[in-house]
Image (cartoon, rainbow, N blue to C red; front, side, top):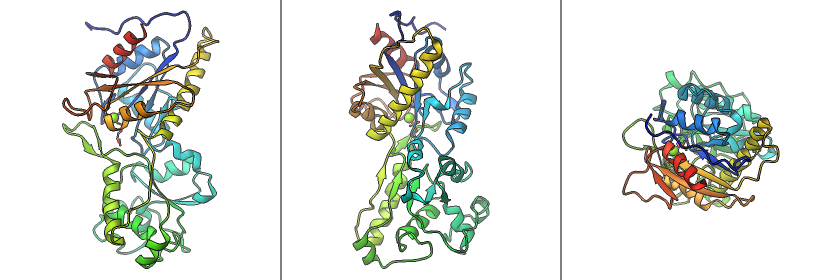
Length: 354
Ligand code: G3P
Ligand code: MG
């Protein structure tokens, strides 16, 4: 290979910088690894430069996502769950909240998003496929033969939902929007009940949490694909029509939002300490000072890194690659560098460190 990455500047102690990589559009296109992604991560591993992955993707458990990535990238140094944060990972911290005893969770049914939520510790989890299984005609145009194989019948005493959590992009928007609207129009989340719209407008609706604000994301198709933000826009549009113009009240985490970057920096700091301790040689490793955030989406990866206020005072440096959502001529979101691919992103950062 004619242009290998350069030797890392040797300061006789652990590097005080690290990398955060976005996944879709930086390391992979769908199930296809991007050129030089494997070699670039192996270079960091071989040079004891810590890194983590931060994706707005989701729908599977962290363990399943990491296993899938290791299979796709076929690296000799496996990626660990401890260096991986996906869109809904921060939801885990709220699973035991008394305000979230029963949650309606949206996301992939084949990937069994219900098990992912239960794995986080949510006690009672229902999914739209359960409603399809339980009620005749609840979503008139949904393919029952496909979806009802994933659902489980709701209990006789129907659940009282406390919140709606969107873990990943819904697969059947008609079914999911219908079930979410039914729950938001219900009496306090009691499945099967219905309020008058004027009461809904006066009293409001259950909390709704989205895990990812991406309008677009990059996979193997030649143009970017609609993301979770598009589903939110569809639900907001339906809600506006039902309520005569009332805005849906919802909270969204995920890149570019501050809480997701704080969660990621906590994860990176723990991971780095563990790795450098394993190395032994760097027992008194220096504090983390700089984080190079490599992403393909100016609106999420780059905007998030540029606006992030680190409680530790670390400086996040945004590096935009041309292998994903960003296209020449688009705004680069104020990226500190715009490079061809993930290997060039690391090359640029290593030169910055020289
Ligand atoms: O659902 C995946 C998409 O929103 C973007 O994923 O890895 O580019 O943050 P990623
Ligand atoms: Mg991306």
